[in-house]
Length: 510
Figure 1 (cartoon, rainbow, N blue to C red):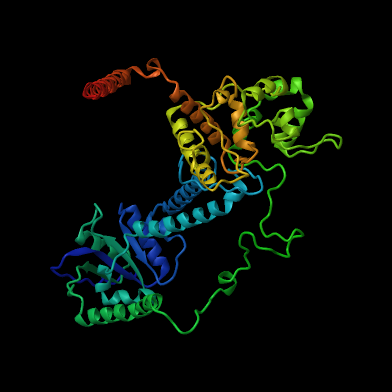
Figure 2: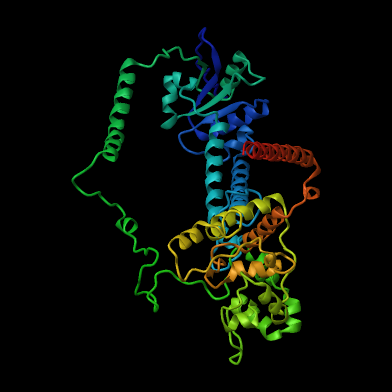
């Protein structure tokens, strides 16, 4: 004889049905029921147990979760973003021009993967964590503040000693009567539909009052901090990290005992090249044709190269300044021959004495932007002595003449024919700006080489403006100038005729 299974108890109601749930008392009967439900074609079924049950996912036919792939994709995204961000912002690229912050450390490359790994690792972990956390929420349909399963008082035992199998009404094979019959056949001791929760959805007034009270109380510390920031206090601040608030730093020009020379500011390492300066060769930096200088005067070329590269030279070679290397022979002996103020006799003598192969053409690509830059730099550094028009009537010169300064040397008039390009090459003018001459200091430390060449170009433009003909004016502006010229000539003619008539009247009156 076989024992007959007891008929499961069921309940019914007219409320909306979300599914059917059956109660089981042991793991084996639950797993067997899960397999039968899977074989019956149900795809939206779930089991609830008080402890993890190995193999229940396979029994229910649940596919492996895609959450690991979401975590992997988020982590790879973090890796890509971190590397691209550091390469584009901290590396020497043109992707984000204007907002770059390259790391200039001991001559190391801008794009240094070992230095980028910590940030890359952190961003990879951060995005992978976010992807895992929020991906889990999305896959589980969270956040959910209620569940129809909680309407069953018997479901409270799921965290104690009872097992439940749930068939969702959203399943395409779901039929309430058939689902109840199936779960009853599978050994469910209590089968009931999961009904809609009909409790009130209005938040209790007491809870709202409590929430508002908590928000108000939590704002008190923030308001206290804001008040302290705008008011004065008789007691000193509380320093949480005193070593960070009072770091042992040094200001510029201060002394220190940490270094033998006693200076806090450290000098440049020999051989250091300023950013952007490697783009130009020695010709650009000196205004001299170095190849030609090496062929006609190798010692001077070697000295100039050694000075530019900060390398050691032989003991028998006297290391001189660039100004001495570039200057003519008589300039070395005294200040009688002034490169910036040559006279007719001096220029004639310098033709035989100064054999320096100066660059005759400006290596800078001339453009409207370059001339505008040269004008800006000229007005800043040169006009105070040479004047805005280059005639040597700057404010400093006028002041020196007013006070009758006996040691003052008048600045050069840039429109002197001896300073034109055919007599005074562009390279020599560049060297004068770089190294100075007599009272004029050198501006190599203040003006970049590119800007010095721009000043040379602007000086040539100033010189050309004083001797320009109508043919030098662009065709689009020529008619306008001709019209203005005709008007001025007419005014001058009328003024001359009026003056002549006035003189004639005066003669007749006598």
